[in-house]
Length: 395
Ligand code: DP6
Image (cartoon, rainbow, N blue to C red; front, top):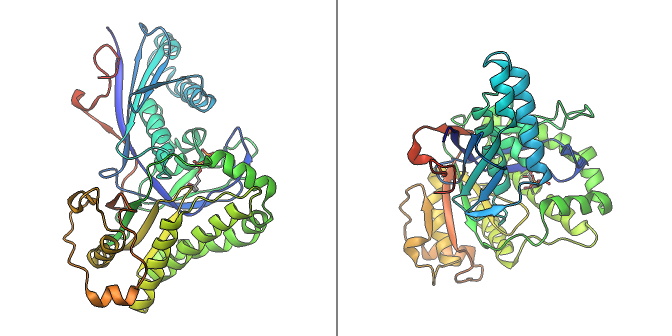
């Protein structure tokens, strides 16, 4: 069978200035700009293989081994946009007739994540950005692709770049200037690390799409946040990143997370994404910072109970010793508790335990992923990486 196939990986991104609220539901245009950090795809990534053949009878998509309905409008929008750009950019290059044929062929798409889906770990961002990267590669579409990834999921546009990324809200009604761009490369702040604390692998109670719709319709706090608070915080966060000022960064990061969840509670009926375990993680971070007499750890939570903590590499072992103590793994076994980058975690000190003095919640964190800032989407060469076999079906 004659077939063209491309496999890409794409990273997860964690918003420090949150996107919450759209001004256009179809074009996925946000009410405010946001800033995120792309995490290393070595630890957290989506992987997507896209195949194109004139012998495929219809477009099919498999997500984490389960076949999905390809009629999903967000998916269809992405396919249409990529094909449109391919036609415009490459029509002449590859011979008009051949290209036109290819654009009418069907696709087989297979995608998987190496982390829990829908648990508030930005899986849709990685997934849609990976799909766009793979399709753009297949159809030889060049230039900025964040505007197309945005049509899959708003936050996906930020996963099109590595390092520190800003998604400009834009002002055009067609969304042409609502794009993501890198504000600092991935090696800009080499000591910065992230710890993802996986509290729950259950799907979200309320999807981000629905949650933000309800907030836009009912939360008065959201309006003043968008108008008055976000513009100032964007400028402050950009400066803290440029200056690598962790204390300034940490304060904005935590306040942003808290304000986002305050808006969820101000939504009517209220949305509560945080759990008792999330609250305990927040308490641990604040007590640790107080004990150190400076901000050494920052938390941020998206639409779920899992935490993303930012800290400097030198503080990771001590802080992990505290996490292991207060949220101690019983069922999972301590050896499976910390995934990702290698780290030697010392025994927790009695002094630290007494000073922090929060309640112990055994087995409440399933595992921790230790990672760093990472690069954007890229292509994997070699058929061993493909998720589809030589007939175009999942391996
Ligand atoms: C809380 O990008 O998942 O993670 O655009 O409707 O698909 P849709 O929403 P999505 O929302 C992400 C919300 C957030 C904050 C953020 O990532 O900025």
